[in-house]
Length: 457
Ligand SMILES: *Cc1c(COP(=O)(O)O)cnc(C)c1O
Image (cartoon, rainbow, N blue to C red; front, side, top):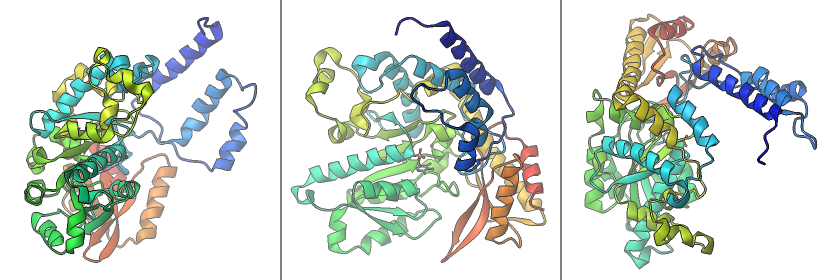
């Protein structure tokens, strides 16, 4: 293992050259997928007893396969929730891999976990949660939500022996992200939905709780509010929900996977009032805090509760808990054991640029949504579905049906021009197909937006 041959050095240089190119290139090609059979025909067998050689495999990736991917930081990729990792963070993602660091326990990962914790302190400070609140980086919002829900459920079970064996229940709204329902399945609890895709208000939550049977009220243990819905950027009435949760003794989780980055933006920070009263908060740095995939985060008001719920026991793990190895063990606070130090790229980028640059970059996303809103309003064939919220814009092309939106999406994507996908907006009982922008990349320009809108004429 210790002798490195010359071919390997050349190979490494080739790969690094590609990476440098990709990091510094400002106008990436918007790739699109071929069918699996077509790719197989081009690429052939690559995993073989003797291997096909690094040079050839890399050529296949660089010249063929990568063209079948969408670089999510493309300035005209405004679909789903895009991303725009800083060059500093991408560079440090390479360093994170090259350093072979195990991020589960302080004993092995101390220096790197220290950096993660510095970045985490900044995230926690954005929430203004009380002294003692702290968190860990996860693989994403789904894993963060799961870790928080497990902590909530275990805390509820610990409150009374009656809850042991009782199936839990949580309340959220239909604006909540799909991962909430999905993770409720994983932990086998029921979900009651407040029927609104708009702001979840205190009164609607109170009404829903009052409508529960005594049996259901007994098994209700948490409410999940959203700090920036994925579809429309809507922030729930977090203060109102906090009031209800305090009064009813319920765990309050806030899913701010997408919107959490906007805590850094002074122009919208007031919309998050109440987040400081949450028991747990999810924020995805890989969405609006310019980290490479994958990097989520979960923050707890009382990290000890998470530790109680998540610490893994095993004779082979005892040494990590020993006095001599004492320190912060990220694996004790979420569902994953072996883990990449996924907060490290964020730390480096924050250290390099300073938090003010993050503020400005997030504000730019919000500003781009306002610019798009104005252009849409002025356009004769276009109409806003609702005012832009955070960096999301929902709008309709007058006279279009769902097929038109789909065709338009495919046309722009196959042309390598833009990726903008349709969504649905719930209006009363009906769902309408509409178009949606989500801005993350501060390098997207007003010209980009105009050019996209022009393809809708
Ligand atoms: C994206 C998103 C998630 C899921 O996060 P992943 O990182 O994709 O697992 C959860 N909640 C909200 C509000 C989101 O926008």
